Length: 100
Image 1 (cartoon, rainbow, N blue to C red):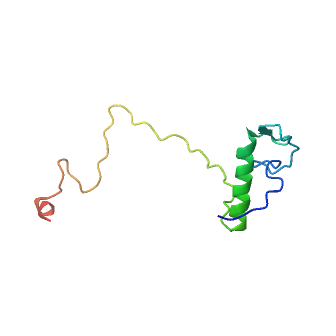
Image 2: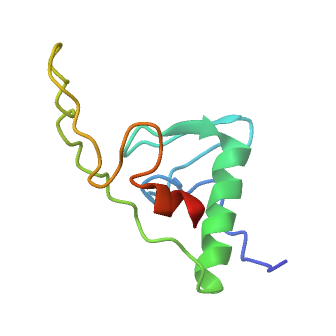
Image 3: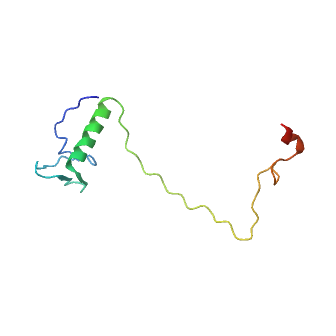
């Protein structure tokens, strides 16, 4: 366990980092900057986790979304399927390979 400074944990947005004025009576955190909405305690817990990991040098860099590739081509009905080189239907290319 690693202690972290609790200041502003419930007021800082764990999505964008903006500081917001949150009343203690508010149970839901809503960021004025990015409109991120989350349970106030979960938002604070995520802030403390990020802060602790950063202090320990274990923080994760911001993740960049991966580009989506076009779908793979569909096999045309009636087209023959390619077989791996050196294989024969039924298992072995030769009787000698079977004995190994």
